[in-house]
Length: 348
Ligand SMILES: NC(=O)c1ccc[n+]([C@@H]2O[C@H](COP(=O)([O-])OP(=O)(O)OC[C@H]3O[C@@H](n4cnc5c(N)ncnc54)[C@H](O)[C@@H]3O)[C@@H](O)[C@H]2O)c1
Image (cartoon, rainbow, N blue to C red; front, side, top):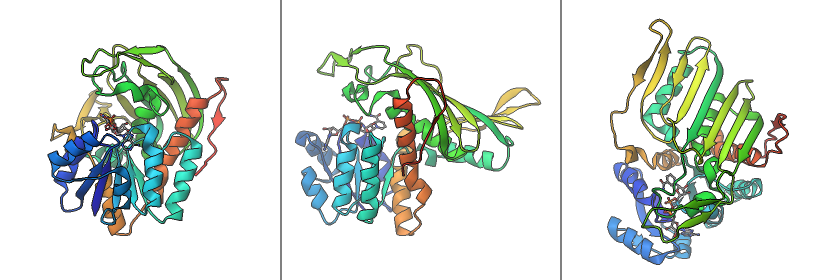
């Protein structure tokens, strides 16, 4: 299937690494960006066509639009793509509000097109191995889980960090989808939440000399602690923060009646997976990455989407998942702070 990329920024070349590894399934035809110079350079580097955004929408040869714009543009670009009769693979988050999500979800059915969304790291070897171990009963019945991610933001490395502190950014909408997607794939949907959040720093200082601005006004909360109660009854503690100077290892652990399993970093496609051995009383590694190139698998979600479309094997659960992630993130974001369980009313 033919692909058009919209958004030729930091992540776009990583997608090209993955697409290059899967040339039999996908063919990147063209790219577009609000910044014409960026799309021109990208097109030259990868020997593809560069078009205006509108011309990319109307190009009849393009089957799938890969939306790699910042979160604030995801909704608009995905809507226009569906209206133009294209399938969409969107970077996360799929939208920024329930209202946007509903419009988008409606367009999928109205135009009979498919929309899949990042993260696709759960398709990588580390997560699939862990999922298989859980399904095989290796840790017994799941009684709990714990997920956390903490860092001091992105302004130290990202070439354009401001969007990470605006609506649609922050740790919840930026990193949350990796953890929530992984949790939902193992535990199913969430039924209730309790959340605490704060904005610790009102302004972020940018030290990176390549970035033109020096300060970013922070619009969103950047430190979250929450409890997620799943329909199954399992309760999970979930912490996600851009405010912690000394980051600790990303954590995604599931606790079972027989043992515990430590997943690889859900932001990556591969990594170490360990199971707790009761006899030796130690974590035993049961999977390690054989390829240290994390970008190797980037775009796996697009490849999976192409296969699902060509084999006419679209999973409804898979289509719904990013929208469930959205409704849980919106509930955590707008939680009233009263400390009671708040129900997640399914919106999609
Ligand atoms: N950078 C990373 O490491 C990373 C990793 C995983 C996911 N992502 C996600 O990928 C997306 C893009 O991130 P990035 O880091 O590449 O950002 P970026 O700012 O480097 O690039 C975004 C590009 O989109 C263009 N753009 C913005 N609005 C547009 C519009 N309406 N139409 C056309 N082009 C538009 C910008 O000009 C820019 O070139 C985000 O959703 C981000 O969360 C980024």
